[in-house]
Length: 161
Image: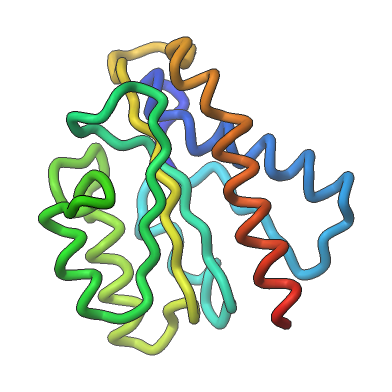
């Protein structure tokens, strides 16, 4: 998720590229990397019927740049609490560069029964959201770790399939 032309907002695409490299090397079945997606509404149609959807996006809160947060939505009540933030990381419904936030899209997908069975958000705390295409050094340093988090989730889900 995000725009590669807004510096750290492009971290989702950087992580997706890294995950795609890893999934090719590991030949993970039924794993699809969908990127670039500039708006959460773009998820509709891509994640329908999925057992697991992992969304990676830049976050902006009071955490240190490069910090990785993981939020898992196990039930609809968690969607409401994520809008305001929690002790597990930044809120997902607060200010966003996107027209409709991820929380709104997840609610919409659930309303039309097209939401994935499990949704996990990997957030990477950004530092610089000005125009430009380079990630800040703290965010660059977090890309591999965030990709590893995604792969661990996917491999765990495959063991249960």
